[in-house]
Image 1 (tube, rainbow over the protein chains, first blue to last red):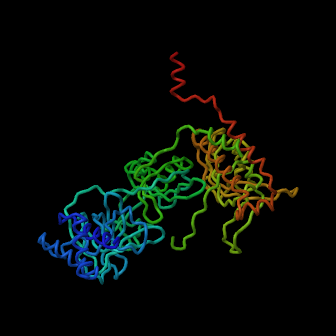
Image 2 (image 1 turned 120 degrees about the horizontal axis):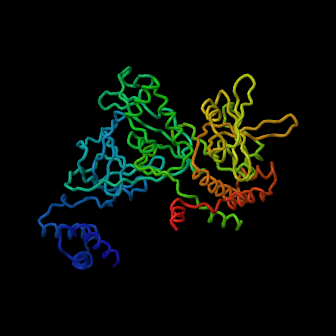
Image 3 (image 1 turned 180 degrees about the vertical axis):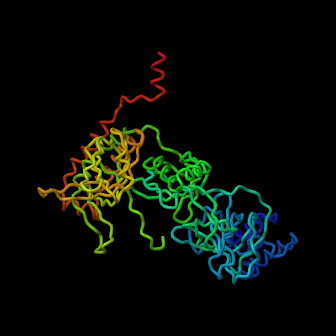
Length: 310
Length: 202
């Protein structure tokens, strides 16, 4: 009767938060209905569940999860098209690029972050940044090796009072810095609210000609001879990397009557050197949180052994 | 990555092998298709990253500046040429005080000499002055990548190894020897600052 003991185990697991019963208890009840009273297993299960719910004074709807989905953590999402439950904090909300998208942004739990999409037509309550929710019945998706979850009509949203540090699921890349791309150095950004686009010749793509705000940024390429990684260094990371801060950069540009001297100076300092960068990946870029110059003495010994053994 | 061409990896290759890579090709008939040098150890290289000692610079241009730099690694010399279309690299070569360690990112180019032989040179995207530690790290890295290629040379389906075999032959011993030479050449006497300080105290 392994069928019955499996069912008993499931019922027990579903109810264990609310009901103080052993698996054997559950199985005995099931067995009685199925073998003595010839009740079909499904119906027997239902009946046994109701018995325990009654005993605990609960409604069926109050059962957590409801549908028997796996409750997963962000780092466990590694397959598309899975129905799962997830508890996560809204790290960031992004501007939807299409009318069909109600909300889009980043969810995080202690194991990492993952993109979420909520369709406009699914008619769900809005999520708020910084709040933590238990999301029942979301579907995983995959695009170019990156996973996301999609909220849908059947998704349940429940705000929960859980505090945790969102994990960083950071990548680590290293190699020689072989290029500093255009758009690096002292740049200007659009000052309009929620617009941080980098100006091209004093123009913002969205807002036209504006008085820009200075910022520092480096778009660099790390290359280890096998793979290429594009890395973005924000103002702080750029100063760490080059030793040139925003005020100094502005002064340099002022003295030279030219902003490009900043990027030139930075290039001379960093191109051709080896770095290890850790940070989250967004699209094709790694955002540098930590940068380490790799300048410890090279060790030829192990490679020499390998060369001799060929 | 939405149709944008992916950036070419910068191969690590010693001068001894680089200067033998006289065969170049394109993967398509498109005029703008990238040009590759076929490395004798069986890899295509559209871009390389090298480091070594810049020993000499010379303006060999007639009408306009055209700078040639000699960058020496433990196995040979890279010839780096920079003219008006590589203004930053040209000005680095103009201002450089030799000898100095440099790192060069660039594209392999070939040209035929008057006597019909083919020379391989490096057209720099960037040349920067670096510390000795960078040069050392590069030597070890170039050795590793070269061994990677040598080990993969006989693997089935290694397209560029097959082409290299047809173009240059299958004797890779010169490149393995170059690796050994480069690594054995490593200055093992090198003392770290802390140990030399300890020396003075004793």
